[in-house]
Structures are given as structure tokens and as C-alpha cells.
Length: 495
Image (cartoon, rainbow, N blue to C red; front, side, top):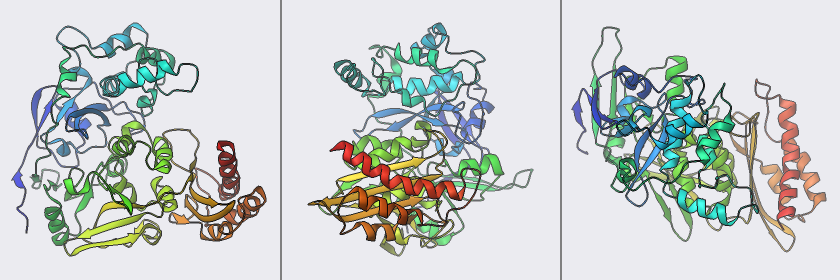
């Protein structure tokens, strides 16, 4: 039995270098906590993580042991999750009487009108301003000027860092102009200098709130080890497990959901990192989507195609790959790609670990084989990887939207014959699923337009699509049919 976390009734959070105590109910989000201590720049717009008005910067550990300033949605994150952490809000960027370069450029280039969204834009822009790789991206963009389409401006600023921030009155051109006008941080910039040191460790914490005047109860725990977390799960199967809270935070804000006991697992070292063996690549379940994108660096091409289409940068900075699978949602973006990769899940309880094929994990609408007391601790991607891959997301918006249909492809062709085909589907049934009939039809057949046309009809019949506010069943069927033909066209064009 592992040692329990230290029980205390308050959390301490460093905000703009001042330590503030939080002693509210554990469902209180970071935004309400910050506004409660008088820091009102961050705003609530959508309360779902889609507008970015609530963005703040948090000091997060980088792969090399230094600190990376990371922008997140404060409206979704429980305030208790910031215990022992360092936060910067829009108010904390200025250095005395001198405004921050991001604030200066936004002002002089007309990037703000009503100002409601501006603090969130500024925090997302500031996190990108301090991104360690930005100088290298600036050099690459300059060297390849005119040859390729770049997401980065001439100063290396990745404009997709603002994908989770919405503006309704200024328009995006002056905001983009402000972003592309930024230089590199000056040598004396204290926020940049802070990045050279390690980020705060996530202390083992037990914040326990007894009955309040309203009758609410709550307890927030952050165990320091996986063993401690599993002990809690074994004894309290009803405890709510949270990581990035990008799903749970919406339930709290929009539906008024409350949990009497919350268990934060996002910083458990056993659930973090990427491990490579000759047989597979293992992804820690608590790794965020942004961390995976950065650290995989394209080594799993299918995930490299998926991740930029997953929600927004603000969401990806907090959302974990294990959390996306743990919800069991039929429209989650990671399952179709992972199904195409023949992924396996490592499920761990106090009794031990077992490995489950992802294709056998989902059993019904938001139902899985994961038993009480079990956590998803890792995702394994078998090697070798298929040479032909693609991720297609059909949605109403190109970025920051929920899929109507999502398809992951991983195909191997040898000597003109399809030797292996894996197709993962999302949004066309009560669960994510493999298109096994289409796979069987493709395997052993010539990789040709004739084969693809015939298999496309089979693919159109896979799943049980339904009508909802995102798309009709007829539309989803049409998208399945055309997606295989699109995949073939993409692969032929790349030859």
C-alpha cells in the first residue's frame, strides 16, 4: 500500500509571481478561481474550450527537463489541479510600466476592438512567442520562402497556435499581423529566462472539502505514484478520474455535473513518456496531444496527420491520448487512426496489467471492456508501420470542430497487391470500429482504381450511421464511399 497524499484543505498556486490560496469546491474551474482573486482579464465565452477567451499560460515540463510556457483553457481545468504550479495571466505579462511585446504589437496594429477576446489571444500568442523552436522555424521559413506553404510566419510564429482563439469584431488580419511582427525575446526577458529551469513538480495532494452551506461535498486528490492511484481506484471505484479535464470540464460548466471525489492522474510519471522497442512504440496515456506531436516528430506519420486536426492547440495542450480513449466516444478523433494502426491498450489495476486490442476495447455506446479499478496506462503501436496512411476528418469546419465522420487508413502494397489494409471508422456507429469487410476485400487485390471503386461500395455499407445535427446518415454514407477514392488519389499523387 502506497503512502497517502498529504491532506490539506487549500491549494497554493503561483499566479503572476504571487501565491494565492484556493479552498473552494473541487469542481471550481481555474477561470473562476482567478477572477475570484481579482484577475479578471480572462473571460468566459463558450465555457466549452472553443473560444479561447479564458486562455492562460502554465509552466509545464519540457522533454529536456526545462520549462515550456503552455497556453490552456482555464474554464475547463479544475483550480485544484494547479496546486503548486506557476501561472501567468494577461495581467502578468507586462514588466512594470513596460507592456509586453505581444501586447504592444496587438495595440499598434489594431488587433483589439471590444477587447473581450484579447487577453486570451495575448496568452496564446505569448506562449508561442516563447516557444523554444520558433527561431529555428523562422530560419526555415526564410530559407524556403516562396517554395512551400508555411504555417509559420517569417518570424517563425506558428499561426495555428491561435486556432483555439476566436474574435468576433476585429477580424484576424490585424491579429495575424501582430503575431508576424514579433521579434525574439530579449536577453533580459524574465519569462524567457524562467524556461531554462525545471517546471514545478506536481505534488501529491489531497484537498478535501467537507459539507458546505449549500450541501455540496468534494475531494480532489493528486497521487504521486501509479500504485497510489490504483489503490484509490480499488477501494473507491466510483471516484472520477481526470487528466486534462477537457471533457469533464464541459460537463461541469454546461450540465452542472459534480463529483464527490476526483482523482488527477495527468502528471503520474508512469503514465508519461514515449518508449520504443523493436516490436512497438508505446505512448504514455497521460501524454498530451501537443506533447505527442512534438516528441514523435512525424515518426508515426498517421498520428502526425491526425493531431493537427484534433480540436485546437489550446485543447491539445491539455487533452491526453488516454483520456480521449477513456471517454469511449464514438466520435473521438484518435480511435479511427489508432484502429488503423492496430493499436493495443495497456490496462492496469492493483491486480496487474493486461493488453487489449483496441479493436476489442469498445463494446457499446461509451462502453468498453475496461473494468472498475483499471486505468489506461499506455497505448502500443505495433511495428513496422504501414507505408501508406491517411486521416480524413469530415466536419463543418477545417479546424476546431467535432467530426461528422473520421477515417484512418493504413495500407501496405507489395508488388502492386494489397497485402494488408486497416481502416478505422468514427462517427458511423455507436462505437469506433474497423471496416473489416472492406479490409478483406482490399487484401489480396491489385492496388488499382477498379479495386478501389468496388471496395468503396463495401465501405459505404459499413457501420450504422444515424441522422443528427452534425450530418445525416445519407451524408455519412456518401462520405465513406468517397473517402476511399480520395485516399487512392492522394497516394497516387504522392508517387
